[in-house]
Length: 353
Image (cartoon, rainbow, N blue to C red; front, side, top):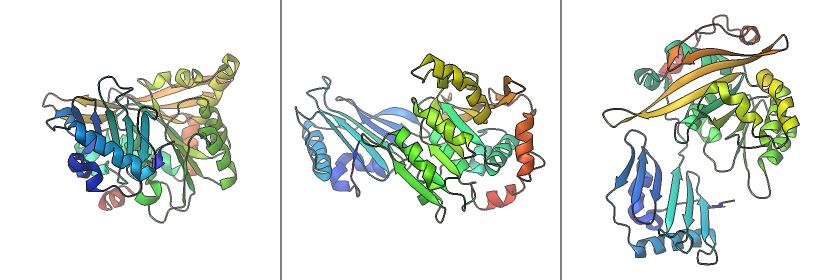
């Protein structure tokens, strides 16, 4: 588990500080030879920034001092977190290409807005209304995509439509969702997992914390079983997963199981308790800029002893407006008569959501 460095300063980061301050920069990577920057709009590029051996040694030394951890031949990995940064450094005795640095930024802001997504053609407007309605109805979401596609950013966008009186528990290894900071006044509990407190431990501990929403930063392994157990009790939630097609989600989750019999039993539960599947894409356009958009949207349903997938969006285009009967009922119970029309749409836009 990373140690916590509470207050990063320009002195600690030196030449890298300008990238720390740049709100469009999400990742800062050094491979021993060159500095690579990931920018929301420009994508990943090599920076013309000379990082000397002296600077690298001093940088690692400063971070190590701040978290009171050694960094040398015997202690080859140094990790530290700030409230907005995740820092990982590998010693040059282990990295033959030279000292390796990775800094991941996750500021407590919502980068996606309704107006911005409409302008950027992130997804059709009625699909955005549908998904906001699904949050209001307390459905369970799995957001898929490749690393860096914007899964967590879209989760943060949707979570702002959770009513503030509903208790939200977030479970992460590095704090990136920042639900409490982004939604001041909301009933929020943030849990951070580590070596002595696993994802499964955190999910089980949440049982006695009266959650309405349980948000797991990423589904990676057998903890997804505990998550589905919580969702089966009526708790709503979000999680993200590495995925390239929403139709593969059930298989992807089953493959996380260590026992084949557990995986077989899991299939029906996935279709019953995972409601919404979304795939986010990130592509480089001809002008070199990066575009993120919703490629796929589906609903999972178990009906009359059969498992079904309702594809709503494919390749960013609307395929169908047919929703599972159970989803229509849940929307109706939440007072939503037209799933593709959001009653508070104009107010949300005026508020800058």
